[in-house]
Image (cartoon, rainbow, N blue to C red; front, side, top):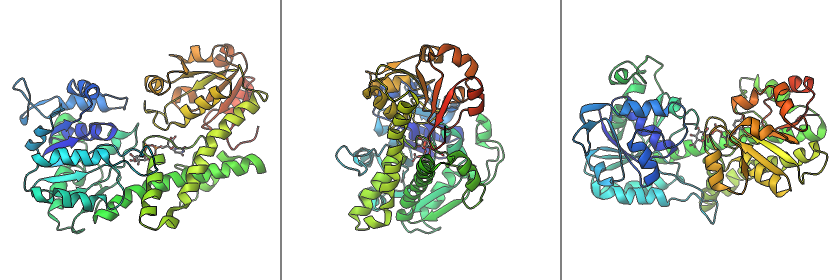
Length: 466
Ligand code: UGA
């Protein structure tokens, strides 16, 4: 088993730390955010993520050769603000954020750079620093040079977890990528990483993992691919760019359907049956948001520009524009549905998170649309099962309702912006008794249109006819 440190305990790091502990490694998670740490120190998730609470709880287990806690006990998983404790570990995962810069499209590398700077005094020869953050191509080679004087090596091991499925994706990824200095299988970093990911590489047999019952069951062996730093960095950026492009492609088709006539949902089902295309990530609607896809495609454009190959990814500008146009269209469609004027209209907003099963509102299309509706004179009343507190922090001016009933009561129109199951499966008859007018604009094309119409509702959707 390996002694691991995880620097940065956000959506990526906290889940990674807990997952690594659940398969038997000794893990020390380091973060500077005191609020987040307070929760993690008590093995409570600092954000909503299905399955994380159970994983953290498993990490609380004492073990003889674990992290020495302040009370003298020895824990498998420990969280601290004291980065000097990373000295006890030999593999150090960098999991800090790379948000969009304040003044440009480029990725802000401040947190990565300071994590490395803070870690440097605690590195020793033979240690491996493993980058997981999404960084511009070329960063890993620079960082490897930086850590070299300590005798430590560097690897790039991008992460592909989706929020809302982070635990499953971390424990059972589709593939594992090792970007190593030599780019080859015999690089010393490969053997170290193989130990870290042994539970995936041997197909999740019972072992230490079985003890905590999280990743212990037998499963398929995860493919792992060894490559150079640049390819590893690009795998991550290319994957997110492809997903964003797929979503914007179907949303561009939605624009066509809106003017030419046609139904984008039927179109998606039909083209998705072609195995070369595939139906996943072809859901037309409000488009993509969150802390990854939007900023990653912008950072990719910015990096390509720096490298003098801007043309190669200039299509991503259009991907971004199509995505943002959907938000404006959603407001127009709501206005149309409500008879041409939004002023003074009470609108129930169902969902404010950037997607279901998360409390994350970073670059949330739902929050953007809610703000635009309010600016257009409507009185929005927002509800969401998990994301209200985060949304309120970002936009305290908006009105939030703790539950569906309060949001729907007296509404002149309903807009569905995040497809939480409880909104998707809302009973149109019961909901119809609460609202003032039975008008719903489905921003995610998920409701049963026929059932709504039978219950007397007017239903509008992006990329679909009335
Ligand atoms: C994304 C990638 O899917 C992960 O593989 C990656 O690890 C992660 O970014 C990251 O870089 O950290 P995530 O941001 O959690 O994961 O969310 P997704 O499930 O990819 O959804 C992104 C957005 O696309 C959401 O707003 C969602 O509503 C939207 N979407 C998704 C659509 O509009 N249509 C679809 O068909 C699918």
